[in-house]
Length: 419
Ligand SMILES: [Zn+2]
Figure 1 (spheres, rainbow, N blue to C red):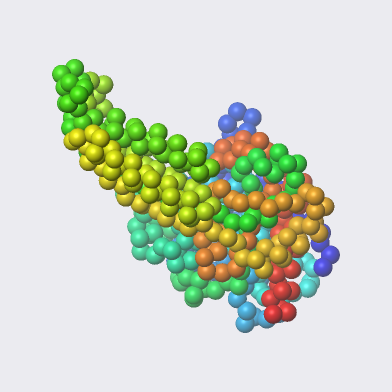
Figure 2: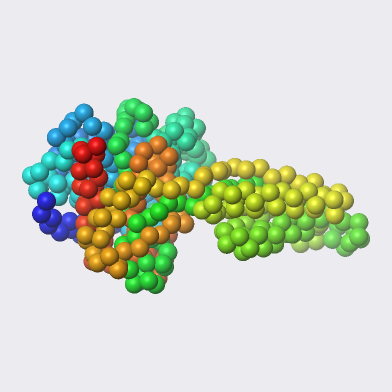
């Protein structure tokens, strides 16, 4: 199939008008999920899809599927998706590139006049960022069966707890009726083009990466109970200072994460006192732990548990508890889809410009990978910056990424047809 330029750049710049955020010299986005600016860019997506000749389906989570027919209408579409929402001070490329490239892939197939065997679906997944409604990849997570519709509709806006995700879906007109389930609204596969959001491709002066998988992520809440008291009156030897005890946990986390070459972050610490002259009686922290190997995460988890037990022995009066609030297993992407992608990448640029990388960040593809063949490709991010208006990828790289995405989908379509 002859491929003319996919012109993703001009569409990216055009859609950046919705939620446009200028900080200094940089143009970014403030387009959090289900806000008015998200509605505007969704309306644009639907209009583009209809212009291409797609059937548009909206599901119960507001995920939008723009389906372009193939020769075999009995096959589930090959999905090509990402997200149009952004962080509160995000960039123009994270997510939007993948959705716009998906639409342009469908447009290129239409303009070529040659139908693929399987139908193709460009997809906008709801609330990937999880900044407004605090659950990352909500739409793709429900579709893949990791979460349910009811609890996701009940998520509340962090800035305004009286607003639920379900209310906002209804308000902006994107509470659809298509079941949000991979069983009832099927896809044959999922492909995603994304910016790297890190510096590895740029450093290696490479253009494209086959993403091998997504590292595992676990989140915890740790509580420490001690005895509060007067900062000047309780003798040091008799204290059960909850924060001093919890501080050893923070240091232990860093030590273990460094030793295992993992990522360990305590992002929130709270105590029951905001007074500078009171001994904290209660302390709380969160922990975010990431690594590609589940065994390594198990090891760190075990050693942190042991540290807390020892803490109770060493410090009379201290009681601790740790609760796991999230467990996302590490993901390896599908070998067949990855092979089709690898071929596409090396036919788009010289093979010396292609590498394989693991994704450190979570993506919608990590959700779909649990239930259908999935793979992802990365293009370089300038200085590795993302979730910031300074996020940037060049016009050339965006176009190369979209071309490779198109070729990968065509390769996979041929693979499915030959199966
Ligand atoms: Zn993203």
